[in-house]
Length: 101
Image (tube, rainbow, N blue to C red; front, side, top):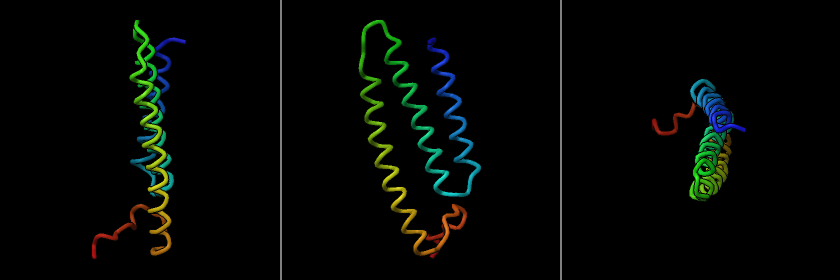
């Protein structure tokens, strides 16, 4: 497969994730969209790592760290959403006004 097709796939995934973050109100959908954006970045990292003439694992190592950060983000984000749902009984992102006092 050509490198351009991997980059096109990553761009499509990133745009879908960006549209989900910018347009959706449900916080769970926003978290899923962030995961799509991180996966698009992982595809780019691995693609550029494999593109070089000398085998270089730097992009793959960064992708692995990105997966670890994404897992931690999902766990912490879902825990925060559960806590907000217990207090506010909604997960609508526009109704998160916890800092207004």
